Length: 129
Length: 206
Image (cartoon, rainbow over all chains, first blue to last red; front, side, top):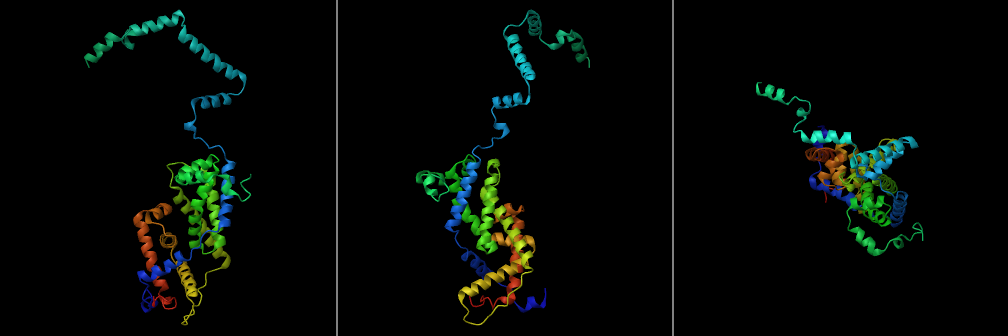
């Protein structure tokens, strides 16, 4: 606080409000020509980017696969991928006998531990600890 | 027909423009990103006047306010393709960009013109009302420059631009209580700074 502050009482709320109102009153309208210029720029900017950037998570699955394939350059990796897919499908529809034996054995056992013959020992151990 | 030959109204039908006017800013911006002319027109017609008046109230200069308006909108068009719906409201984002650009302009102009000198105010009776208004504005702007930066920003956004406190809180990245406190302290400081000019500014007679 200085002597100056005591000499002049500060402006009250109403007086400050009058000053602020002055600013609000003197704000001009935007000019028509300027607005048209901005609209032209906006249209130009909109037409420059006709395609919207889709976020990666919104990409369809096939787009992603295509991207992976595109990244695997050359015919060799692509041929590998295609043949792996082909054999996978073939095995699913018409499995050879040895594959069938394994899957049948699995489906007939109740637990994985039966397959390796640990069932009884494990049961005994769990019951006495 | 080209869209740059001054026949903007012809590029979109009135009905379509009317329909699109009812869309939210965010929807229009998404359409804008897809190259929609009507959305570009609607967004500009809606946002440009708001941005311009904010810039003018801070800068008090038409040419500078137009520069800032143009720059703010160009930044929005650039940001449009990456705009996320859950991001801040477009108007709030624009207020922040515009405000920062205005502050940069003020800094540059102060640097170029040296320190702001307080004009001697003639308090002879019979001074024209218009002149007194200009003097009031000038005095207020000089007084605002004496405030600490954060107080100045809060007072400008609240009382010059006329934004509500929640918007100011978002723009400045501070709590509502902090905004209220900054505005209150800023106004007290202004009231003290302007006190010696009260009579010259014709405030005692109002």
